[in-house]
Image (cartoon, one colour):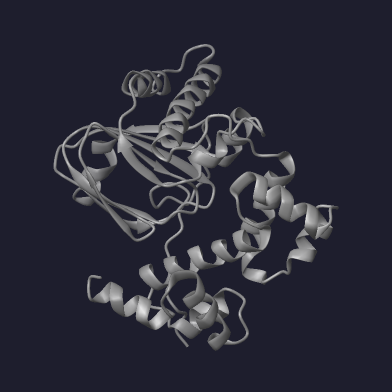
Length: 286
């Protein structure tokens, strides 16, 4: 029996090797020309990408949402987000790819940087970011003493400017805090959301009560912990319905539901439409 299709998941632009360097930087042209300026929807499990567009035009597909690209602009692509691009021929700029391990090194917990960076976004290019991206690209191409340290420092500056711009665009307070406990909870949800674990199991693994876990989640996001678990499941369900030909029942089983009807009810409560209607609306261009 032929296996059902899945969303392509790559380490870097279709390559299967791990990101061996501190980070990766290249021009938009270098990769796009190889694919007629179109990159099909895919995702990276452990890579975060920032695209700095300085000229040209195009369209970005981020988790099923289409964004017209009018340079100069910044595109933020968190790990796990399904993304594809169509660029006008000759579009200029850079793609900066950061491994999750590097982000863990440069982003200290509790400083409020992670929350904005975990939101896919297309926005006007922040002042100073083009110069930083160009400097990072030049440093990446060198093999001079202190290169790794320079790249880490520039990566921190680039991500800080990106986070600030996203936070301002989303009207988030600059002092938004995320506790280490909440960060650990997010990591567990990302690891186990397909297992349909009850909230009490997450709380037990974190050595806190469900009540305390809900309090921490509410402080960080304004939502209870259980709602965040459900939201992660729904986000993956949308991706599978948009980017694969899996049936609604297959999506349900993929996400750990034993009963497709139960999945359909959960999806309808969260999105306003049952899975089949959701896909039908997409097909009709709604």
